[in-house]
Image 1 (cartoon, rainbow, N blue to C red):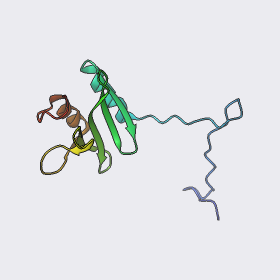
Image 2 (cartoon, rainbow, N blue to C red):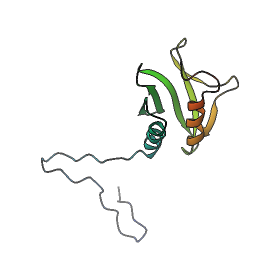
Image 3 (cartoon, helix red, strand yellow):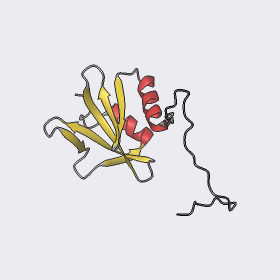
Length: 123
């Protein structure tokens, strides 16, 4: 297989992370700005919520009871999020609303969860 060419016609260099002094491969640090924005929103409101990221989005948990509060599932290009709530009866994340999920920008989604107009997040 031929190496890929860059825009200037030269082959692209291998972009491996240099080895740490111990001879092991160094781990790259990936910044998650979405998680930082959620944490900043939480801190500005007095805290009390932990944020966990996984392959399907961001889960918010109440620190005092360690119970799920909400889930933000990225939609489209990651600019908008589907807001889900934890259903204790089904023991799974469920869409908010009767006609499908609510999809909002991150700021609007966080405000929606904080206000809890449907009474499904803060039990």
